[in-house]
Image (cartoon, each protein chain N blue to C red):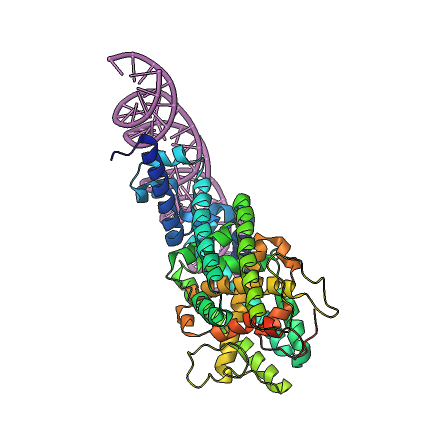
Length: 220
Length: 220
DNA sequence: GAATGCATTGGGCGTACGACCAAAACTATA
DNA sequence: TATAGTTTTGGTCGTACGCCCAATGCATTC
């Protein structure tokens, strides 16, 4: 089957995106150039500015696509673990196993920093992170509900009791927990990038303390 | 030693370091050049390579100096809070207040990523982070000892995975907690950099949970 | 007052960059 | 087959880069 003209164009475009993603991981966001991206993709430099307006556009598109892929599969996995007791350990194991050797992990870290200087990327990434937090918060809510908690857990999306006298609502707690959980995971990757020996320190217990504690939110 | 001449030289050198630190925060690690650093410092470009072997040397030295300053004062503050009950909230408040508007915070984030590609920086930063973790672990130990309710891993409650034979020591738990605490804080800064509205989500309770201070810590 | 040592200047080298473009090659349609 | 549209080529701008170095200040020491 002979690929049509526009099909080849799409594939060329995709190869540029893949090459850009690779180079971001290997050399850093700021070190990716049109010529290097084209070279990695096995294409001529002029092609970059045919398919993308600027180099920044190429980088933003490449990294966002990868991030969306990652968040999508993570949320999917989260939703698929119905049993909370099993799910907690399983998911936390997965989370704590994020490795510096994992390209998509490194790419995500690069994105995080680059987004502080690229407004469009910042906005889109903020939205993406919001989605992830929402999924995690839902997961926390369903987990705490299924475990027979004393704390009334809100249904995902449904209205939540406005507030308790001395503290936050369960939903608010779950949101904050999800935020800190995400931050901890991203930070953990970064620290392990710097000191690979840290991978030998197990943190599943501490992650569980952070996540599972929503079951005993009230005074003990 | 020649007083005047060498003194001016040292000041010039310092001005280059300061300029480099500023530019790293403003434009990113990879965007700092000899000419821009010299320009910011109000000096001639040639001076950069008089005082520093390469641009990378300048960046590494500038960022490491700032990081050492930061870690030093943080550890100092940690050690000065003897009372655990007061210390927990006080320190956690401080930690959760790290802001995207704080230059040294942004600089630290830039360092973290750059260190994945600059071996010397990576090594020194790993050592520095190790110091910080040690200080935090010590602080956790003294806090839990003073409060009477230690939080040894393997204790009841939380969802403990089947990994640990017999349970880890309290020290190991404190080390892991310190690691995750540091990672969470760095990650939190990054996430707030991307979505400033996250600063409105209080995470002090969750941080306290992570730190094992599940006692009646004051609500935020 | 000459010699010494460090700080600084200003210019120059080769290289790589982002961006751009006209023409060529190719495919799909008429 | 002719035509219209898209993809790819190969090259050229001007700019900025890291790094280098000979010459010049300038204060201290002999």
